[in-house]
Amino acid sequence: MITAAEQKKGFWYAVVCYSLWGWVPIYWKFLHGIPALQLIGHRIIWSCAMLIVLVAASHDWDSLLQAARSPRVIAIYTAAAVAVAINWFVYVWAVNAGFIVQTALGYFINPLVSVVLAVLVFRERLRAGQWAAIALAASGVLYLAIIYGSPPWIALALAFSFGTYGLLKKLAPLGAVHGLTLETSILFIPAVIYLIHAYWTGDVGFLHENTPRNLLMIGAGPLTTIPLLLFAAAVTRIPLSTMGMLQFVNPTLQFLIGVLIYREPFTAAQRVGFVMVWAGLVVFAVEGYITRRWFPVEEVP
Image (cartoon, rainbow, N blue to C red; front, side, top):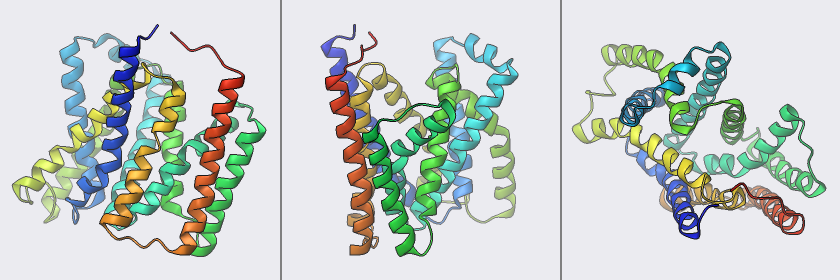
């Protein structure tokens, strides 16, 4: 069984992980003006380099090399790599285009999207309270679509791309570090080709910028890898119910950063839509807590 000390460690790993993800818009704002596709290329390359060093340091190549020989595993991780690359691109572009509030909305509705995908793909059954939560959040998204004049595409793209990524990871056999190493390795060559092309044809990007911005582009690797390692360490130490509640630290921080620091508009009409989404999340969380309390399932030791 996990000891109380280990659970306490896991709690703080999760808090730091979600806090880092929550503050990350400020990081990307320092790289404003560099095309999002270039930033994603650097995120892939430097993440891959850091992960390969970690795998080499652990002397644990066997599972990674064995997975690389399986066409089915490669197919799963290729699909996962595409999903997470789309998520990264949309997120970085949206942050630097002034849509941090909408990115926060995407990560608020992501847990509910994940539940819907589980129903569609794994045929999971939802309880009445879960359906009510999804209906409330969907009503909020519909309301926002009406006041925006179109659906909140950024939020939906982030929620569905990350939801799809999470779904694919449920089918994947490797752990967090080895899995992300394989994903970034699949994307590595296209990223290198694109960045070489961008370097020779553009006047912005790596080595065209000043030293601090060049270092920030390299730092995209640790920025991606460190929170993932913290997440992997946390999820093995604390209940998923606790992880589920802590995950809202991320979009809450993003939302506050967008509104309070970068002064993105947040009108009374928008508040109504967000409140409907938040109400759906509250119903979802309370329903899950009550169900676990009254009908507890055995925790995995």
